[in-house]
Amino acid sequence: MGKLSDIHIRNWIKAGKPLAKSDGDGLTFTLSAKGLAAWVLRYRHGGKAKELTLGRYPDMSLTAARKEAAEKRVEVSKGVDVAGAKRLIKIEAKNARTISQLASDYTKDLLSRGKSDSSIGWHVSAYITPKFGRRNIDDLRPKEILDYFQGIAAKKPSTARSVFGTLRRMYEFAIARQIVEFSPVASIKPHVISAKASRERNLSTEELGKLLRELSKQENSISEAQQIAIRMLLWTLGRKTEVTEMPLVEFNEANGIWTLHEDRAKNGRTHLVPLPRQAIAALKRLKEIGCSSDWAFPGINSDRPMGETTLNERLTRSNRLGIEHWRIHDLRRTGSTMLHEMGFPPHIIERALNHVQDGVGGVYNKAQWLDERAAMLQHWADYLDALEAGAKVMPFKARTKELSAA
Image (cartoon, rainbow, N blue to C red; front, top):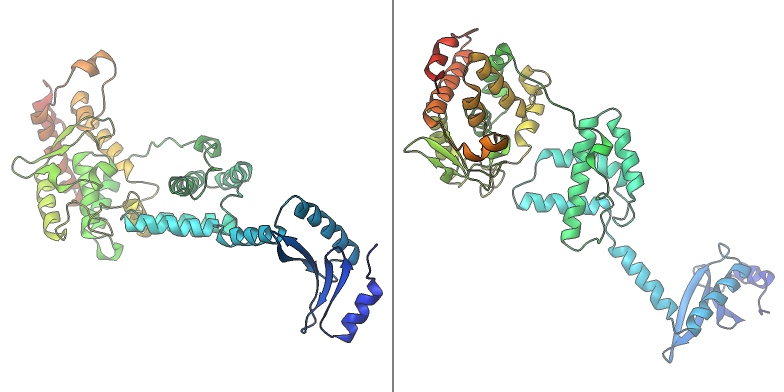
């Protein structure tokens, strides 16, 4: 039975004098000069006197203090330094990283490598931080992540997938640096959040002409290099990152060939692109404005290429140049569609798109058809010039006879 009672404690607090009174077995009631009443357990560990604050009175009652002290004495009897363990927990809590801190470290790393873009900042500030920002990075659970993103997907499926991708890459960054051992995002597949929508968008001739005319208007705030990148995607029918991450060394100015090396091509095969004269002139211009960069389209730092989402983000800010519901990849689909409508042979178009032929034909047919593709891409670039100048229709069929026998 302890020595203290609630009456004793209330009287001491009323008197307001600093004191320390033992209840027995190390449990001590303390009152500071500032009037703070607390319970302290005094014990010995490793031959040294130790103290552990159990809690404040009256938040912790006399009965609760005796129970807590008894439990801690059992730990002490087993050799545990209970005060040291509490300090370690405090240190770990202080050093624990929140989702906000992880997001900051992740975006700083991307920026240092010239790969940051505005979409990631938007994902963090609009979706990730408001929901999870104060949480410890070890505390998130797959179920709550899935529920949150499925809620977003109900209204904005593409946004849900892209923001989820940013959170997943944040945890991949943390694992690679041994900040965490487990990613709560790893077990969730993107298609469970929302099915990836199939894109069927083709721009009309009117829309394509408008795009080209609006592109260079100053009020759209699209840089010269970004304008050229969009035109280059049209001229070459290339994939976005294959074009925007082009090292200048891939461009042979003497013969007008762009060599997309196998390590950068989506299908893992080297692809030769015979450039129309418009593209050759543009690449020469990029060399003039590129600040001696090794990249045709430098990013924020000239030692890195343009960011993966830079063009789409810039177009979003420019209201898609007044054309609804289109994305950068739609340009490649639009070019393919229009070239088929012009009557160019499908195998020439497919080779220009660097598509891999299925079956045995894909293994044995290594034909490049460079001359045929050069003629087709030059015709296509001239057609784009005409659309930009305001032409409504061009005589397609007359040019296709040149390739009909290819």
